[in-house]
Image (cartoon, rainbow, N blue to C red; front, side):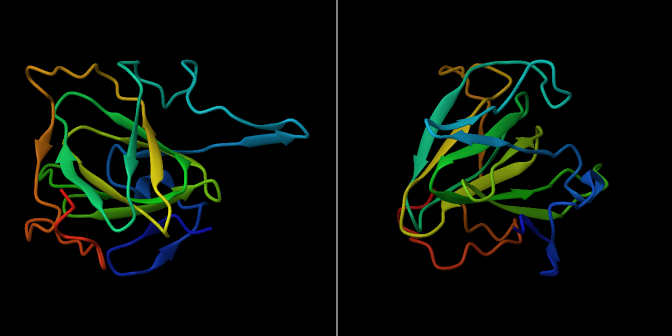
Length: 175
């Protein structure tokens, strides 16, 4: 299944080399192990190269046709996995010093395409549920959330500063 679409619309397959992603983005294919009792899926291990550090884990739910984004972090990296439903996760690189400045990465994740996406600092990200079902996203950031000083910097999901069209979404509910 495809999981990345370039800004020109060219479809890229799972065997795309890591250097074609936004600088610092890492993707891990998750293996689902099934037997007569059900399923098991390992997400993140401390002995893997993609692991940096553990801050906390939380789950967020996104409704269909609603965009959660754009935002970025200055300190923490995020690790996104879709646990239920399907989601479109979109990244934008605004870092002028980055070799991928101005690029967009788009990922379709869910049980049919289980990936963990590591999102580096200073990279805008947002997501929306695909289809008619809520998407449940697990995030494992590298830092704990500080309620008094959140490491979260927001931009309107429909800002002209980010060259991305979310398509047919509810602009009133999205933010």
